[in-house]
Image: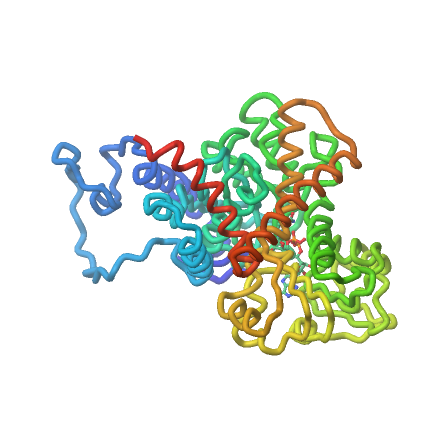
Length: 503
Ligand code: NAD
């Protein structure tokens, strides 16, 4: 079959002339994945006719009575040389999350069974989504959902649409979500998911079909008491509305509490859209207080001008700080005397990005933005931005992780040596999941709070978490990241020790 690389999803796709065969194949793929994964994760019975690997090959010892017989002739296949088995989510980003965890576990002093349980996600799902594009062709998109820990409650985490989405990325982000929820004392564990696609190249109709198919495939694994998705990179309120509608259609009644970050008209919460960026600045303000700095006198640079970075830049600007540079995927803009943030927002709303904005600013690259001389550098784009390669060149006095995992372990080590404090992601960007929690609670109770109430409750939660992290860091002489992880691990560990391991 002729295959060609499709620009909007991450693997080769059949040509349009193969449409009928593609539809048949997509049925085979989408029905094949579920039993195979379920067999290895939930213990469902494997159909006798299932021609996949025997149970032993899926990581479980085969009981003699479970041996399957195959009547079909077995074709001769090339010999597969088995190498040491790495688990499927074991990628560099997952290693980064694991290295942080292992380091914090040494400081946390929790029982071995707790440490072992937390080193791997509870459940990891790989899907393939057949989707019709507007030109009539079909593309199959890889999609993932990973649930790290359900010890404290349902799992919770974003859905991202990005070409870099893979199982390891979702597993790492799911683990970070567990720590974030635990640190904020929310009754949730961590999850993350996404579709490997280029959302910028897809129409709204195509995104709707991807989202609806993804939700339908996820339906057995998500639920208001099981796993509650939210927006992340390149997904938004509309994406959540499609997810809520698809799930509700299957149930037969409206289930607003299945997702958070949805439009207010269907049970979304006021202030959810602003929550992550506003929470970032609440933490920055608290840190300035402890450092003896006046926030209004600080010069700030913000990488990423989407939901988190755009709102953080606005909040910093509104509090009187000078935002000298912002950037998005198209590059950055710099003005030594401070940028006019509302004008930049208006430009992005009209043009889709900062690309082409030149009015009274100097165009800079993202690399240059990271190395600008400033007081506060907010990373609000994506993971792995400050690494061993550039951490030595940073000229900020405080690094703020609005994004998840933007600093590599090597970058972290270099910054610690240079005495640049890092406000860690699991604390700093927790405003989003905190207001998501408020949204879920409001939906379950069918009772809604106003903006001031939510902002006040968020500020209380962020301040409480910040103070605990700061105090642990100073009492024990450890970094803010280690302190945040230790505090979070203690929350999860307490619950796991009380519950024990089933059976
Ligand atoms: P978004 O899609 O709204 O915005 C991302 C921004 O980063 C965009 O401006 C994009 O152009 C820019 N960007 C992407 N790649 C870039 C690159 N290589 N260099 C510079 N800029 C780049 O996403 P978001 O919701 O703002 O999420 C940003 C980060 O914050 C992600 O790591 C996400 O996981 C994390 N986060 C988001 C939330 C939330 O509520 N949205 C909550 C917690 C954490």
